[in-house]
Length: 408
Image 1 (spheres, one colour):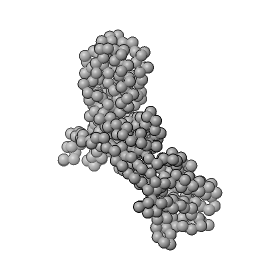
Image 2 (cartoon, rainbow, N blue to C red):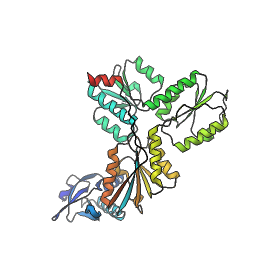
Image 3 (tube, rainbow, N blue to C red):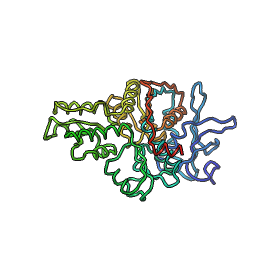
Image 4 (cartoon, one colour):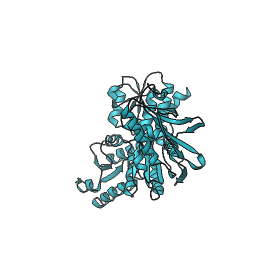
């Protein structure tokens, strides 16, 4: 017979330990639950009553008091029992006090906030279905949340019925996509980040004056595809200094460069220097194309790298600026891991880690960072320190179509 803990099957991970003396909180539940799910086990979370079926540990959290780790598996499931005991042992082994250095700025930038608000307001003000071409921003949590609220995400416009409402993502689209939308009679609401729109305008201007445009970026990224589409006959994509060496252009005196907005500053500088060496008359954009938010998040991370034993970056794998943060930390000699959610953290990463650097890419919600801090607080006393290198005050207005919808 099953214990009351697991009448619906699977492993129960404690959000609190209930004893005769009272209840002990278990904030690290999401860490253990994520570990068990990676092992292919069904998992539930909830309060755990301590009895012969439960396995638990108590963690000293200093001034915060005690925290618990607890699991209970069906007694007739030896695989689940063994996994639950192993997970409990591994997380107990990495418990202890830690310092968390929070890089600031982190999480949402103005372009991401604008794009998300555009979808939210469009959902509120349209009675017909709202489609979004590509992910509005590159974050799994954000996309899943908006989809649950009614947004329909598609890869291409041929999935959108004629005459429907479609939102373009923050990464921008090519003119060919805009033309197709017009021909199909779609109501277009443009979520393109204004900083990406700036790069598109520069591409058109450079092409119009007869320049060859060298675009520094990552092949296949949606932003890059949109920029390439502005002047496809005049634009060449490069990713590394080595790509520059092989360039053979008809008129070396008429060369301009642009960059993807979410690149690593130092690596991009190496490519630009290679371009300057090969093309001494290189024309440069009037202002840096790498967006302020990307630059700020990289600079804020630099303020914590040297003191950290490990850096965690909250962000999705398709988020270019998030991946660049991981690479930046590793290039500077500090191990780093990219996580979508707190459940992605692995116990072995925390072995010997007493100072943890924590940041988030520009498309990751701030709440996900707080989730990580809370969960780690279940493993021991946490000292939290903010390292702010600048304060962001940028705000982008909404498109007229959304403003009219809200005002009417």
